[in-house]
Length: 484
Image 1 (cartoon, rainbow, N blue to C red):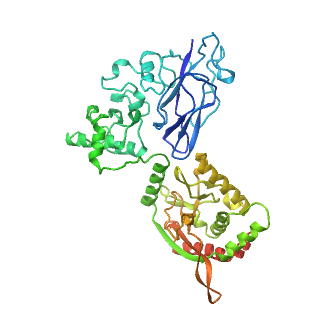
Image 2 (cartoon, rainbow, N blue to C red):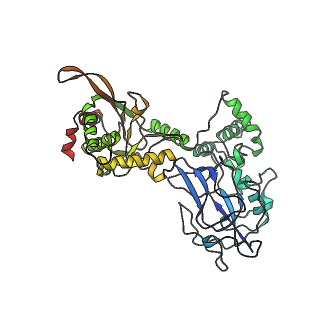
Image 3 (cartoon, rainbow, N blue to C red):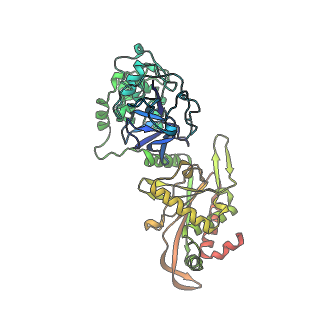
């Protein structure tokens, strides 16, 4: 007899609360092995292949490609130990469930899941079409659930509840699983206004609750005088919001035109930049520098043989030397403790534009690398960014960011600090300009440098000293010899 196990979207780490299904790697009816990747998802940080901790036959998938699911929502179900038509157990190798070993699972984990011991309770196999949202509800209502699924009395569900409680949340608070919401901001909006998300019918794909759904519910409840300030107050009635009425409210709420959801990388960038502007009192200073000697030094280094040294690597080396002199800019602010935390390592982020949007890969321990090592790491991370292969760990943990916007053909900018860092150095394009050199007018390679800094960690004198040192190193690379 087959045991049907439900595999839910695991916690992918770094505080991520949802992921978008990009591509299914298996079909219903396929045999999967333990730890075999079954779906490719896109988080706000990176593209990730999610491995399944169970081996057996896929009986159902939940969510179409392009659907955004919250952490903890069902991904698929697997029949472990299901007999094949010929009488043998389907699957092979570690994917097959041998007799007497039905409770064994994967030792593999992402974050927050792993199956050193599979659930011991059983469920009957129920037919399910691929990505059919009603399949999990039918099996949940009519069979004993496995350990990851909480069983609810059938009589507790009102007639207006959706077929799948994991899609839009069970009504009247009977279901304790995650409610699919498009972003944490929507959850906060509902919480601050005392609105129970389990009372809403989401108008998004598979019952996903959108910001428009919450806003419409609040407007409807406000009109009826039923919105209270406390979270324990009676929320808006579920019948007030339906998939049919919420889009109409959304259309009335704003101007017509092309609407692009702020999700994935674009949503993460929007959230981080907004937070930076809200929390950080930033200031910007800038200076023009003669980069002629730096360009000549790079040409000489590459002519000497060996791996090529990139201009970004030389600028990064200058940054780490400057941070050694002005460590206040390699800091973060802990507002709860009201302390400035000066960091003892430099994890250098650099802005990279990709087809998925702007990402900031991080070079770990940049202060301990030479120009050749920095060049190699920049090249590796840039290629991974363009291919969408960066991991969440490679996109977080930066302490200072270098932004070379000169590649876009612009001279200057006022960068927004990459929260929770304290500063960002911007580098414009390097172009021939008239310049007074050794008392005479000459054509030189000139670059504009800008530094945006958190005014809480230092004053203008420190920021100006940092930027002036960077400019001196650009104009006279030999200055770096003092720190090598």
